[in-house]
Amino acid sequence: MRRPNLARDRFENGRPVWVLGGVLAGVAVILSAITLVEVLGVRGVEHAQLKRVEQLRAQRQRLQQAVATSNRQLASVGWKKLQSEVDTLQDVVARRQLSWTRMLADLERVVPWDVRLVSISPGAEDEGGIRMQLQAVAVSRDAWLSLLARLFADSQFSDPVPEMEASPASSGQQGYTVGLKVRYWPEGRP
Image 1 (spheres, rainbow, N blue to C red):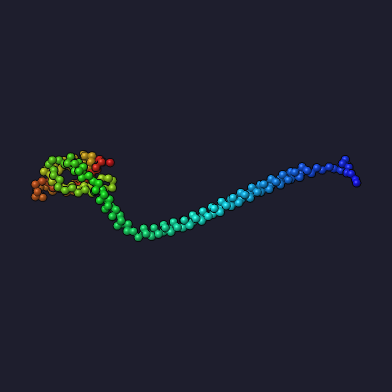
Image 2 (cartoon, rainbow, N blue to C red; image 1 turned 135 degrees about the vertical axis):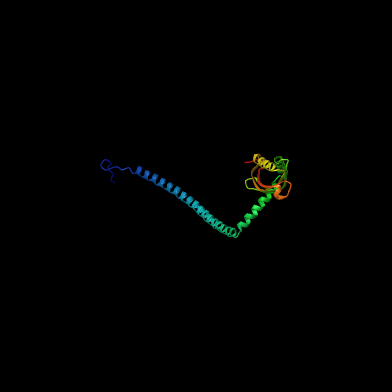
């Protein structure tokens, strides 16, 4: 048997290469396994997201159909009639909320002693005021003008506008018959 001459032949130690290759192969297998687990996890999330997208699309379709149905129903509504009914109801509610006692007390404070109110017709306004039409009989023209001046000066009333004036000679009555429109503000002018 021949013995190798180690001095003459090269000695190659392949063990470190094999160890390094084995370690790298192990790391590659571990990283591949981690990647595979992550890919499978991501695919599960992706499938869940795709199901959610389909659910949302179906919900969107249902909502679009509901909106179309509602739009068809709203198109058949008589808006002008509805608006007039709403305005009428608002006027009724405002009249119910009107404190006649307070309004009459404020009028009594403003009306001079020589003017007698014959008619009061209130109507609500959007801004919170109340428009009133007043009919009165005044002893003299000065009493009538005094009422007008007091309405201008008082903080509960604004914008008095005379509509009609009839003297005793033309109307055949004992005093001046007058009519005016005025705004009444229960809480004071804004």
